[in-house]
Structure formats: C-alpha cells, structure tokens
Image 1 (spheres, rainbow, N blue to C red):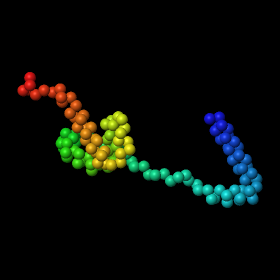
Image 2 (image 1 turned 30 degrees about the vertical axis):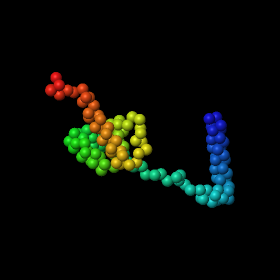
Image 3 (image 1 turned 120 degrees about the horizontal axis):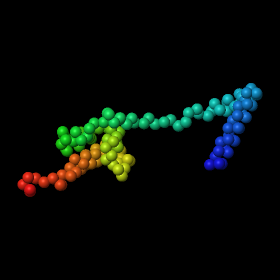
Image 4 (image 1 turned 180 degrees about the vertical axis):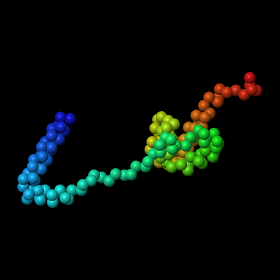
Length: 134
C-alpha cells in the first residue's frame, strides 16, 4: 500500500511539473497537445444495464399462484422478463444458496420460482388432518 501511495504521489508531482512547463513553453505545450490528442478520452464503453424493476412494480406471486393454479401460474411466469424473475427471487428470498445467479433462461428461472412458491404454499399441510381421521 505504501508503494502505491508513493507512486501516486510521484505521478501527481510529475503531472504538475509537465503542466507548469506547458504553461511556460508554447512549443512544448503544442507537442504535448498533439501527443495527447491520440489518446482516447473516455474509458471503455459501459454496457447498458438492464433495469431491475422496483419492489412496488413486482407482481404478487402468492396471489397469482392462488388465483391461477399451478399449471397456469407456470405459464404466466414464463412470459415475464428475466430481470423481473430475478427480482422476484431476490425479493422473496427464494434462493438462499444463490444457485440461480448465473441462470439466463427464463423458463428455468420461472420453473424454479413455481417450485419454491408451491413448496412454501404447502408448507405445514402435512400436519393438517381431515375430519375423518380425528
């Protein structure tokens, strides 16, 4: 870390010295401008990030699961865009192990959400008894 700070300090002093000389010597300034004009100004072009929907914009998967049924719910999920599916997984904490973080297929993500939603909906149903059993 010390070597990096020393190098940064050295480069700052060097740039100040070059700027002072460019201010005093117009010929040096012109040479410096032609030299630096070949250097591209910006860094690498940034990829546009897909906008992840806000929490308020996300559909309620539990209400949709209850109203549509499992088969129709799976079909409905498959039509949602991948960023929305990822946001649903994150908001509802469906993937604690982060297995789905590298998945890109909307069908695979939607199947995962459907399985997890179904599992959560049926959680505890094994302990419910029917009237005939009592």
